[in-house]
Amino acid sequence: MAKEKLNAKLIIAGPGAGKTHNMVASIITALPELSPVRYMAVITYTNAAANNIYLRVSKKISIPENLFIGTMHSFLNKFIVMPFASFGSEQVGREKLFLQCDLDAVYLKVESLKEKEKRVKTPQGAAVLKKSIREKLNKKGYITFDQTLTIAKGCMANKAVAKAFSNRLQFLFVDEFQDSGNDVFTIVENIRKEQKTRIYCVGDPEQYIQSFDSSIKDFKNIPILKAAASSNYDIEINNKNFRSSQKIVLFLNKFNGRSFKSNVFQQQAVCNLGKAAAEVGEDILFSQKWESVKPIIEDFYNRCDNLNIPMSGRCILAKKNDVINRITAAVSNHFMNPKKETGISPIKAIQDTLLSTIRMNQTEFCDHYQTTVYTLRRHSIAVFKAIHNGRITNENTYGSFIKDELKLDMVKGLPVKIDNLKFDFNNQQAGNVVTVCNIHTIKGLESKAVLAIAKTEEELLLWIETDRAVRELKRDNEKTDYPRLGYVAFSRAEKLLYIACLEKVRASTLSRLRDLDVKLLD
Image (cartoon, rainbow, N blue to C red):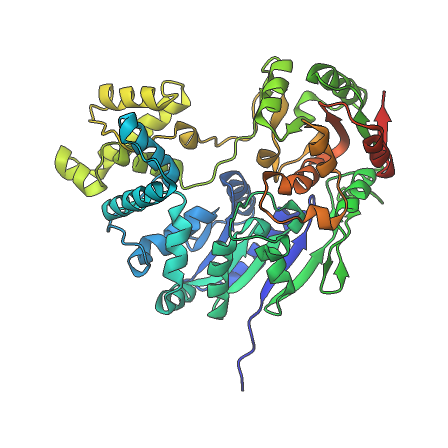
């Protein structure tokens, strides 16, 4: 008898659908089937999301050693790059050191150390130098952030590696699957083809804003849509929205309505607190104030006050950093930014950075300083504390700390991205302050009231575009993901959604807003 085909499962779930709650429930349901000699991996794209899943699972059960919960990069590094890198196309040294920066950052650092007349002049020259830098780094065991995917994909192209890896992995849960680029999709497909692993992917194509894959030229070719059209994936639709009011959900539905194998995706506002129906909610608002952010914010605050929404339940979003800077100035810098990181564990990230700073691997460090790995770990913790208490704020203060406090010799040549080493374990920020951040950072989070400020009328028009042909333009222009940025910003709101633009808009734009049932304010 032929063995039954093991399809992957793809759950299409929009904002506020309770994706994390459902994933945790699925993990706990599957755990009794997990073999003690195999793994279950739960992967997502930020440490914040991974920590959230870990905490929710740990409240219900004791986490077994063979349950991995982490970011995509940490998963690939742990399960593929570390054990199998020598089987890929890149030649990597035996001791792996993961740099918290990409190859371009290393290239720019190398170039900055040269005299101006000796710097690379052509794109061809830059490509040659980058290749040389990468090969030298790999030989020493250094792996740049962007190389993890390339190495993992190369390893999984090896049939023996794919088989060995799949034999270890019994369950794979992929959160925010829409953010997977082609390389990640290729790896997932290689796992699926081995027919050894149960795969569960959860995502929403309309929230595809994180992956900047140059190989994707047409929106219909993003991996989540290719999977949805494939007979190798069983589709499940979750059309509930537990987060937003009825009026906000109706507004959001104007921007989706995609069909998945004859099922049209439209959300329904539901209430998970035992009430008969979700709250009807407030009208979607558009401020006709423009140019200055201050009066817009003041009116937003007044409306929040009238609805008894505390400062901690308010969120102000924008796409452009210069707009964010104007907003933070207007709120007198009394705000929080929900920092979200991607990468590996904090101490490991700092330890690898420290070793790259002195241009040694772990073995060389222990031999040179006649010490043990525990000294290296103490140094890493000291750096972590110095960053946390503000003693280390940039590459210069980092260099001084390494030299003066740790008595180590810093070797110039590799960049040190201090911002990538600032880890925040506590998302519950102290103080009753408003959240201010760009739209990419807010993804996956929510707020009682949201103010979304477009810089220009062109940006606003893309945010409110409902024509799918326009929303799905080829990804060859920075503005092509603006419609989905608008969708992500709008869908963070639970109770109040307030939209504004810093450029005066035309009557035709106001008419379009009215057609979307947006209430125009004087």
